[in-house]
Amino acid sequence: MSKRIYSRIAGTGSYLPEKVLTNDDLTKIVDTSDEWIQSRTGIRERHIAAEGETTGDLGYNAALRALEAAGIEPSQLDMIIVGTTTPDLIFPSTACLIQARLGAAGAAAFDVNAACSGFLFALSTADKFIRSGDARHVLVIGAETLTRIVDWSDRTTCVLFGDGAGAVVLKADEETGILSTHLHADGSKKELLWNPIGVSTGLDQPGKILMKGNDVFKYAVKALDSVVDEALHANGLDKSDLDWLIPHQANLRIIEATARRLDMPMEQVIVTVDKHGNTSSGSVPLALDAAIRSGRVGRGQLLLLEAFGGGFTWGSALLRY
Ligand code: COA
Image (cartoon, rainbow, N blue to C red; front, side, top):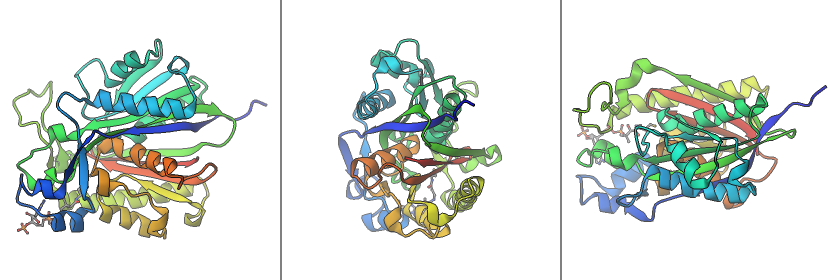
């Protein structure tokens, strides 16, 4: 009987633009305060892409680090998937641009747009290709320059977002890796968090993020509660089996609510929102890479990743690292 194939994380990497914008810096742009931002969101600072620095640049640099950590050459990649909602171009995809720079000729390359859940949607897609035997090595990237679509005169949104990228290299392995992924969406809530600019709808809209923060907050907490329950139930696991929660980094209060649902002390939760803000698709792989490189997350541990974003979209990945 042939053995079951899993996707395992062979290596991770991340990249943040050099420029840091603190809460105090923001007080010079909009009517806000460090105290308000920290108490409502947990954010202290965020990184901002330099002029001319693109999502593809951030994703490429994160990818180089992930490939190095995995000990895998670009020529070994079968597929590159980029989760992003701020692609460099309408086409080709950011994944194609990164594929060319890496010299991974022939590897399939495409973007996935699921807003802040983009990385988990990309990871889940990669996992399916590996489990089916159609791919052995897949580079999965979450990369964003969300500050490019922020309305810098809107204090209710501009304080929340940052730029950055994270990446993982998945490889086919007989040892347990990703145990499950679960993805969901509810398009009927699109106007609670969206950017109404489009191509086929016309380019005459403002093209900035619009959000009803209170509604998003409530919906996110409920959806994340249900998706973490779903992940544990599907694997016959108990909350106490988890070693780490690696959540989407949008708001510390949302993260704390999910941790409470799982009876997890905050010592078992990876938090980077204070330093990164909400980097959308970049946030989960950035947090994962920070946790691995700092030595907190180790091989063999059980990790629960989750995310929620515009669409609405939400999802989870339960994996043994
Ligand atoms: N600085 C100072 N005051 C601000 C402010 C800012 N940056 N942004 C909003 N305010 C004000 C509002 O104008 C409002 O003032 P008012 O009472 O005089 O009208 C007051 O603060 C409270 O606003 P409210 O929207 O009720 O605050 P909140 O406690 O809900 O926090 C968010 C706002 C955005 C932080 C919160 O709703 C949130 O995090 N939502 C989820 C957003 C999210 O994570 N989105 C991405 C999902 S991927």
